Each structure stands twice: as C-alpha cells, then as structure tokens.
Image (cartoon, rainbow, N blue to C red; front, top):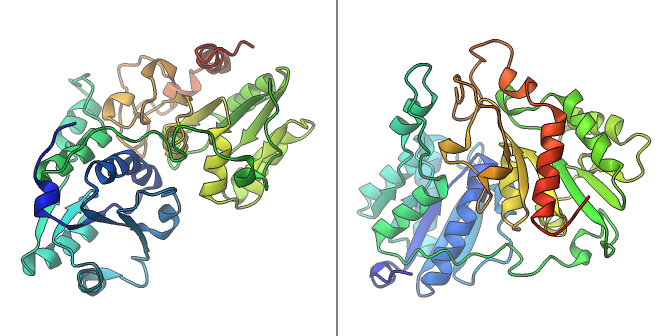
Length: 361
C-alpha cells in the first residue's frame, strides 16, 4: 500500500455519492479501505437516505449522513445550505465528488467559492461511448468504477490499498441479524439468492425463463431459494413462483432492510442477479454472483467487486453492448441479448460457481 501525504494535508474530507444504489454500494470497498489506510483523517460520506443504511460496521473515522436532496436540500439553495451546515459541523477542508452530476457540481461550486478544494472522479465518458456506439466499437475492457473512485483519493494524496474484506469482516453475519427472514442455516444446506429484476428493460432476463431456473434449483436436495426484490409487481411475481414450493421464499413481501438482507446474503452460497444493485450488494459480503448481462457488458466497468467474469452469463453479439445502463431501446427490437439466453446456461453457471466453492449438486 502506497504512503503519501493526504492524511497530513486534510483532516476532514467530505465524500459525495447519491443515486443509484448500486453505484453507492460500489463506493463502500474503496471508502472503507481509504478510511482504514488513513486513520488520522475523518471522512464524511453523504448519500441518499436509503443508501446510507448500506454502510454497516463502518470504520471509526467514517461518518455517514443520509441527505434528502428532493425536499430538505433541493435545488441550488439547498446545496449551498448543505455546504454551510457541513462546514460548520465538520470543518470540511476537502470535497471529493464521486458522482459528477449537476447536483454535486452545485455543491462543489459552493465549496470552491469558500476556498475549499474540490476533486472530482473521472467517469470515462469517451471510452464508454466508444464501447457502446452502434458501429466500430472498441471492445476493450474499461477500468472499473471502483478503480475510478480509488484514483481520485490517490490524487488527493491518500493511501488507497484494498483493505476491505466484507461488510461483516472475515466472517458470516450472525443468524440473529436475519432471524426475521429465516431460521439459521443448517449444515449441508444450500442457500441460493435470486434477484431477477433491474431498473431498465435492457437488463432484465425474461421472467418466464427465470421462473424455469427457480423451479429447477428448487428441486435440488437440501436447497432453499430466496427471491429478492422490492415493489408490488415484483412481490406478485414472486408469489406465483413460490407457489407450491415450501423452500422458495419471497423476500419482497415485506421490507427487511439492507442490514438484514446483507446478513442473509453473507450466509448464502451463490446469487443469481442481473447487472443491477443486487450484484453489488452480494459483492459487499463476498458472495459469488452468477450475473446475467443483456444490453450492458462487464467491459463497461460495473462488474461486482471481486466478482469473476467467468460467472457472467452473456451472448457474444455484435450489437453488444449498446448501452452503459441498459436504458436505450434495443437496436434489433427483440432484446435477443436476453431472450437468446437459455435457462440451462444460467443453471450451468450456478453449478460451476458452486463447484468452485466445493459444493456439488
């Protein structure tokens, strides 16, 4: 781990990353590592309120603040007021912007006008454009978002070694933390988490195909399946899938909270997820993820922390990737990047991921 002068120069560092949830989750391994590597500096992390609950077992020099930017700190006046309150409370002497959007630009302007230094991470927009454009794609992997986050701390002069193990350290979470969802895991049992939803259509595997995956793994001996999601529509889908399966549990039927779900995930053996926030949540507890990719691609830099690309299920199509976030209409009109993936491909990847952990099914 490199040593430099950031801790000598800055004592109270503000770090900002608001939406989306998955992007906030990706900051955690970096922010925790920087905190551990620079114990003499206090870091103040501001994020959306719901995302603030992801920060579990924080280092002693990390303060996490959930900020409501839609009501309490809305608009230009809200950002300037937030800046004044943060400086008064914490004596900020450096602002690190890990979001790089209009909201954080305004906040950065407020700090700059007060003579406080601002550093902003580099999104790599040009490389992502060249990777996702329709013709003459540059099919080369870009550096990960975590590496981009780490780089801005390095520019500030902080030690940036990879010191993060898991939200729960080097152990699995205590069963007490997920007792509202499940009894403790019995020896020899297999726990599989499946999160089939994402924000955009270009990242959602056909639900009827995913149902076949659920039905197949639910028949494996000593196996419990946890369906993860949120919202009324997702809950209704999961209810149908769990029908007639005592070992398939719908976690979308109630709000368990991130601490509970992360504790459960730390005791699972594998997760199946889209290119979505759930992949990054599983990564925070070092859970292997079989990730399904459609319009997006791991090359864009959003593969989960310490996840393996060999566990990514994807088709080699000349049109992929067509989008960084999966929010663009399909150029073909049929989303074959997803509909062309057979359920057996996902099942085979699950078996492979489990076998690498010494679990044979």
